[in-house]
Image 1 (cartoon, one colour):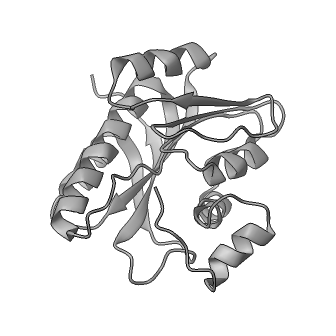
Image 2: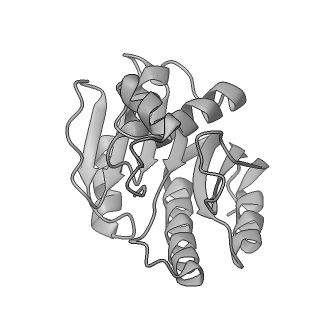
Length: 201
C-alpha cells in the first residue's frame, strides 16, 4: 500500500486531476507507455490492487473486451466497469489463488504486483517483508501467466534485491529495472518490468 501522499505533491495532484485513485497510477501509465506490454483485449491480473489506481490504468489499456482482476487484502471500492473483477484475499492463501482461477477465463497476458507490507520504518525489515510478498506474486504469476506473457513487480531495494532479480531472470526473457518519474527520489522502491515469460519446469 502506498504511503499517505503529501497534498502539495505534484504527481499526487496530477493523478487526482486525472481521476485516478493513487499517484502510483502515473507510474504504471509511464511503464505501459514506454514498454508496451499490454494491449486491447488483454487479461491483466493486479496483485496488491488497493486502492485501485493500477486497476483504472489497466482498464484503460485493455478496453471493453479485456479483463482486469484485482486482488488485495484490503477491500477495494468498486469501479464502474463490468470487466473489472475484485477479489479480497491474501495472495499467499490457496483459497485466494482458487478465487483468482475461477475469475480467469484463460491464461493471463500481464501480471502486475504492487504489493507492500505494513511499513515499520526499519528499512531492512520492510525490505525483507516486501521481497517476501514480491516472491509470492511471482509464484502467482507462474501459476497464471501465459507463455510469453509479461509482468511488473514493485520491489524495495535492499540486500535481497539482486537475488530476486536472478529469480526473475530464470522466468523471463528480459528483465528491466525502472524508476518512474512519479516515484519519489528518496524512495527505495523500483519497478521491475519482465517480458517473455517462460516456464521452467
